[in-house]
Length: 106
Image (cartoon, rainbow, N blue to C red; front, side, top):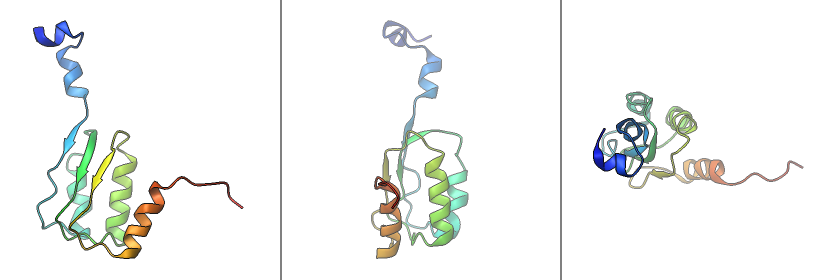
């Protein structure tokens, strides 16, 4: 074990389980049809941030479902960057509805 981590009460194995930032998907070429494949490449790792900025995402049906499934499987994800994509008002409203607390059903 690393002596620095030992002084702080952490072992080397603790470091490998810590969530890390995810910034690899901001390459300006990703589309809805390629989103599912791209997200699945490293789905077993937990991330705190997903940066999809600067792509060509519209988040229509296939892209929205892929993103939703990925986010459900990432319990520590707290930042989702989607700026500089081609999202329309309907896609933004769908995303916002996932983030808003739901009140009692009437």
